[in-house]
Length: 293
Figure 1 (cartoon, helix red, strand yellow):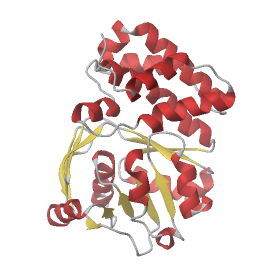
Figure 2 (tube, rainbow, N blue to C red):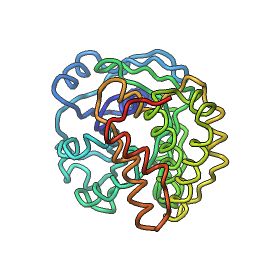
Figure 3 (cartoon, helix red, strand yellow):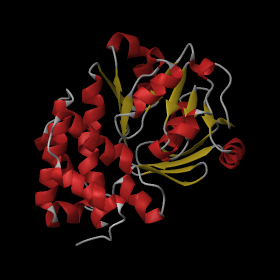
Figure 4 (cartoon, rainbow, N blue to C red):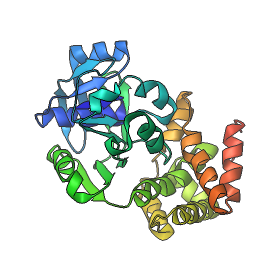
């Protein structure tokens, strides 16, 4: 199997799959690939413990694999996908675990609709150096979209590595279930440069309104989205929790603003769903607005 993008999420998955006895090929830039070949992937995790797992590493995938996990940021997807020859997954499956809802169709155009199995991952995991992963959450969960009978073996493989995995036949519910949760979290923590605790207390009305907007768009797209459950999940988060978009902003990295906020706005426009708060936040973040209190 292969992992495209061995960062916080991809590196963690590559490591636990290797530890479970699978041959894993990581696809990355030359400097990262060199570090992985030399040192493997070192993981510190409350769920999996501390360990180092050996992996193979290359800059391109040419040989056939039965599974390729795509775990790059949406901002890097176009260039990263070119590392995979379409024939390398001709008899396998490609599982994108990206934020957003529009990437699956782009990958289907390149690799074929029957090859792409959309999924979402719920985990807090950070690459602190090439081949070094800090896994912060006490869980790692993946939802796969597709027929349960087709994906039973894949789900079993992931569960065997310690990843809680569900198969849900309804693709919109899988993808929008994640985006309707992620968008309010990402947009508000990034706009105000605050972790979730101060956002859910100092900006509670905006949080509730944005959750309602995202849920309405998700439902218009055919997904089963419960805004009450989303708010309850935020309330259960540690007060210091930050979104990945906020962490990217703090580090000066490109933001997945288009994949998260842009996708939400485009879907809202297609279905005639008013999302004034989401539109304002995306516009302010696009303009590089200073954090507001």
